[in-house]
Length: 144
Image 1: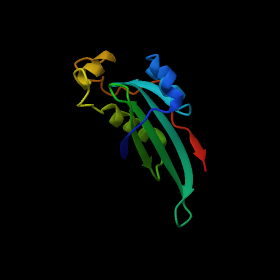
Image 2: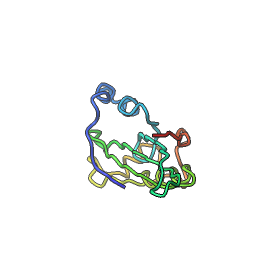
Image 3: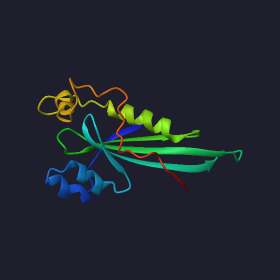
Image 4: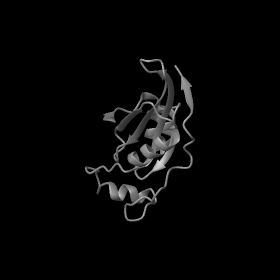
């Protein structure tokens, strides 16, 4: 998993200036899906790619990108995951959805991640167990 910070794309700036983080994510990542997690709205871009191993066997690779606004909304945290040679995408997508939902920002201005999560409807800073955003559709397959 690769994790780094990134600037908001220019296409998101108007919605971000209006305070609409969800719309800013939709404009920034039109190929992705936006769902609410502990830290608020998060964009997930998923891609399935068919390829072949060196011996010619078919291989399915899932590529996921998560774009998570930092608490002050000035930048995004980008987490990129490539999962090669998977038999089925959905269990792995669900696993990484949960892993990325556990991201905690320790340096959050104004009090930290617990208050941020509480604003998103969580109780005592904890997300309900097994709670995967229902709005995220199953990962679809593409070929390259």
